[in-house]
Length: 185
Image 1 (cartoon, rainbow, N blue to C red):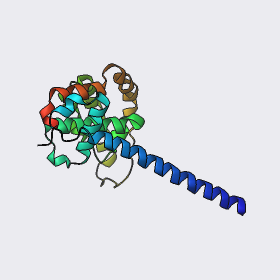
Image 2 (tube, helix red, strand yellow; image 1 turned 180 degrees about the vertical axis):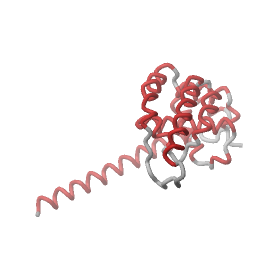
Image 3 (cartoon, rainbow, N blue to C red; image 1 turned 90 degrees about the vertical axis):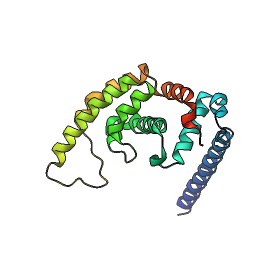
């Protein structure tokens, strides 16, 4: 019994320490980002590529999507796509509550990711076809994770596409070329 208590105390201590470290790291990142936040156009010129995307994503996360302009919408959608697709591929994208998948091809084209747009259009068509088959005459289930094996054929092309068309670089270039779209007025 004593050994179990010690292990649980150790686990609790490790969890507490992990939480403290996470809070410190987040605070440092937040403080670093705040140096550039809302400084008009010069923050885009002065920020490194890493800081630029961090600050823009942070600013977008603090707004409602209905308040985004066209450029902000594109960057937000690409960012969400990257987060959802990195581990679960297109199935992750279609099970996300934050992405309007129909708008992804337009967002990709806006930042110059034309190959991603083409592949995503194929994925959208597969998803819509499979989704209609599954729910024909039925109400969609709430809060379920749907997996469509037909999307598997696009996983390898998606992975390879990331090596050819770097979304990080395309987003950074787009933001620098359209500075005024990312400055809070």
